[in-house]
Length: 140
Image 1 (cartoon, helix red, strand yellow):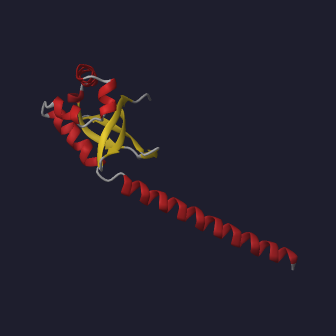
Image 2 (image 1 turned 180 degrees about the horizontal axis):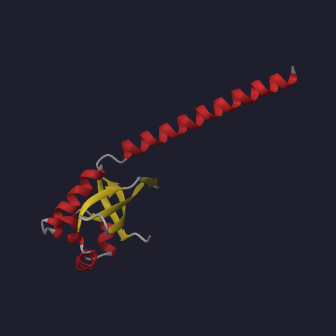
Image 3 (image 1 turned 90 degrees about the vertical axis):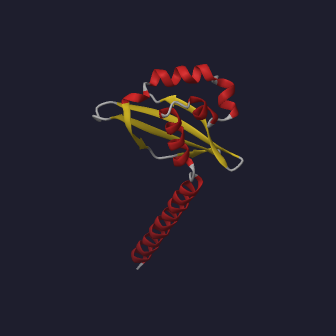
């Protein structure tokens, strides 16, 4: 009788724990999706600006903090060094929320899909609008 009681309590505890974990995961997934709304259009706008040669437009999509650390000339050198014209496809990774920032790795792929360029972006929301706060070439 005692063994059956322990077994029943163990199964219930396991089920409650699993339910709590599922609820926690669902809450965080919804929070991430709602919080990240607006980032995909920003990324598209950023690369559209670069593709059309409007580097100043792309630079304006960055934060004041970014501009304090990376001047326009350095931004232009960074973009030139990336050789973005080689890449035609963009694959987005899974966003991560850290301290009111969203970190996202974007993988640019060449047309033949043999070459890949991973870029780490950090986004912050300023006045209800997402801005790019950091861009670096990811190490892999």
